[in-house]
Length: 317
Ligand SMILES: NC(=O)c1ccc[n+]([C@@H]2O[C@H](COP(=O)([O-])OP(=O)(O)OC[C@H]3O[C@@H](n4cnc5c(N)ncnc54)[C@H](OP(=O)(O)O)[C@@H]3O)[C@@H](O)[C@H]2O)c1
Image 1 (cartoon, rainbow, N blue to C red):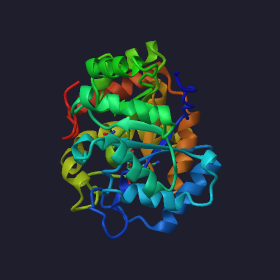
Image 2 (cartoon, rainbow, N blue to C red):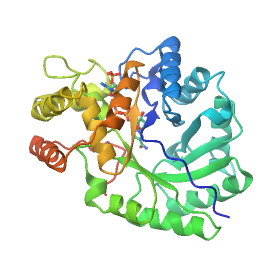
Image 3 (tube, rainbow, N blue to C red):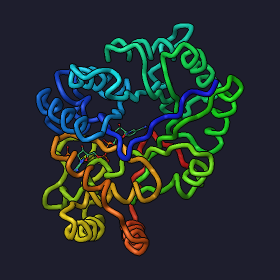
């Protein structure tokens, strides 16, 4: 009963910041997103073969899913893939909180299935994972993945799904030059050995590794990401400068090099896209081949920065 294998792009698109747009935005990113700007992002991404959109109920509490659906209007459902999440902490108190949350997502996104559905975190693997099975069987979700799970939790989820003829088909964790816990814990190796795609999130550390921000030009004042990263921008300068220098020969930016690094490590980066121009960066990143020495050099500079960017929602791996 195992479902048709998931099609994995070189780079997926993240829309957490899209939850900031509009009247219920919470200002997490402090970016100014407009409906027309997001439509432009969608058009550019879709026409360049970037068609997997990652969102979650909790990004702007439904706002990200709604504006994404709005921006995708007019495209045939088969032309794009939707990736959204069940967040245990937002579960309702009905008989089946997973089915309920999924139905609300489907409603907001105006569709009757999700291509890739994630359990957002391992709050209670044994409780939530079994509830995915009927949703796979009914076709409401086509593929499942687990996010922020450690190796043991991935194995447990896989065992529960396996009893019904399904499996964990994807893993999504924080993975960047600055935060390589998933690699150190053996999760990347595990995914490679079991042919499970690993999606890396926050490859650009919410912009801190993009090269656009520096002590002289910090992240938007008042935003959550500014609170997290502005204090460590001086420590990141040597790394972002080196990425910019590596990119320069290829007409690429530091952000493109960071993205190319995540691809070189065998992962699929989910890049938070807020501007249409960033799609050009994804196209460049797709074409950059970093030499082993460059990868080692960047990782050494990242280690020397000595910053811990583990999110408040993440457990130790
Ligand atoms: N499963 C989970 O628990 C989890 C957690 C976090 C994120 N995610 C997913 O992963 C996605 C990515 O993470 P993220 O959005 O938090 O952070 P990110 O991808 O590390 O960084 C996104 C920010 O980087 C900047 N940026 C993006 N592309 C750029 C480019 N080509 N050149 C220069 N700057 C660029 C933008 O900042 P400006 O707008 O300031 O230019 C953007 O807001 C999320 O959107 C979400 O889908 C999942």
